[in-house]
Each structure stands twice: as structure tokens, then as C-alpha cells.
Length: 255
Image 1 (cartoon, rainbow, N blue to C red):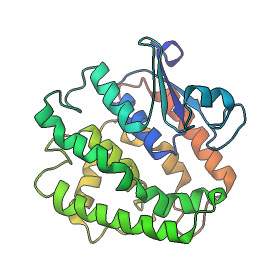
Image 2 (tube, one colour; image 1 turned 135 degrees about the horizontal axis):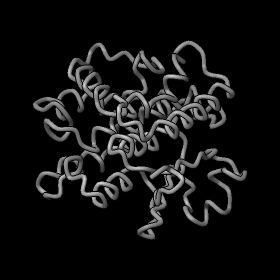
Image 3 (cartoon, rainbow, N blue to C red; image 1 turned 135 degrees about the vertical axis):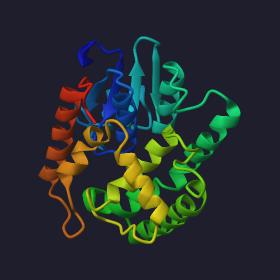
Image 4 (cartoon, one colour; image 1 turned 30 degrees about the vertical axis):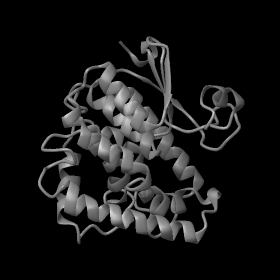
């Protein structure tokens, strides 16, 4: 099945961290989907504030997933990841046993006021200048992210290879799209030298199937530590990332 025949339509942009987590899951599981590029904050035809999109998703957030086969429409990346794992029985990534899934759920429910702050602290101030984020908010996000990174180093990864154990789960996908984007290979916005367990985990995550493809847009965006990217550079990174994902999502030889 090619993407045009898929029952799954994912609304978002490849540079969006939560969107990227869903893209990565679908790619690594080789589940076909259509990706509809959206323009965050815009009221235009493909904007997240367009009245037609708001009728589907009142909060105007991405990612947003439509499963036409099941008649399901769902927002919020964590909810989408769990839904997809349940729908397709991907229990290796989200265990069906409550005792085993508890640690995954624990991380997922803490994500928005934890690792998610990496984007507000470092990524958004460089890439979304239009948001005019107050310095006080950025400083607060940096502190929250710092505490979360220490927890990742000293708790979540203390005795296991991945967040919920020795096997990867959707908790790792959610965490990596936030933490990993700051690596020198991508935006180069954070120094991970004081965090050896995190650095080991980051390396292990790059070996997971479809890592490179799902992160194409970040590779194109490149190092933004010394100069914020021009708007056209951001647009190009999203469009080229989209084209790469759509043209290669059925390549069984990828990574």
C-alpha cells in the first residue's frame, strides 16, 4: 500500500518534536501514513488556526491523527503513540501488561512538564522568533529541563538501557525527539558531556530503525548555536524532510 491509500493521515511538520515522535514510530513499524504539512499558528489554508482544522481539533495543535478505518481522530502525541500501539498490537513498544506499562505511562505523563521543556528552553527561542517568548519563561524552562535531564541520568537510565527497561519503548521516542535535537549533530544547543548515561542512551537511540529518516529535517536545519536560521531555511528543512519521509517510508532497507 502506498501512502495515498493509507487510512492514517498525520497532520504536522517534521521539525515539530511531538510530530517527529509519531513519524518515527510509524516509520520504524513500517505502517503507511499520509503526512499533511501544516503551518503552525497560521489561519491560512494549511494553518493550524484555520477554522476547518479547528473544527477537527479545537486546540489547533500538532500532531493530529485521523484513522479513517476506525473513525478515530486524536490529538496529543502521547495519546497518539499509545493509540497506535494498541491498534496494531505493538506491545513490544507499549506493553499490554499494566505492571510492565506502568513505567512507560509514568514517563509519558511527566513528559510535558519535563523533557518537553527542552524545546521551549532552547529550540523555540532560535527557530520561532515570531512567538516572542519572554526571557523569564525561557529561564524557567531551562531549569525544568535541567532537573529532568538529571532524572534521566540518575533515575530512568540508572539501571537499564532504555527508559522503561532494557528494550526501547514509546517513552524513549518521546524523550529522544526533545533531548536528541540539541545534539552537536543537529542544532548543537546543549553540552551533554556531564551526562554519560544520557550520552550512551543518545548513541543507542541513533541505532534504532528509521532514526535518520525521521530526523532528516533536523539534519538539514543543522547547527543553529551561533546564528538563528532564516525563515526560508526552516521552511526548506520542513519541506525537504517531508519529501524524504514520503518518498522513503516504504524502503525496507533503511537503517
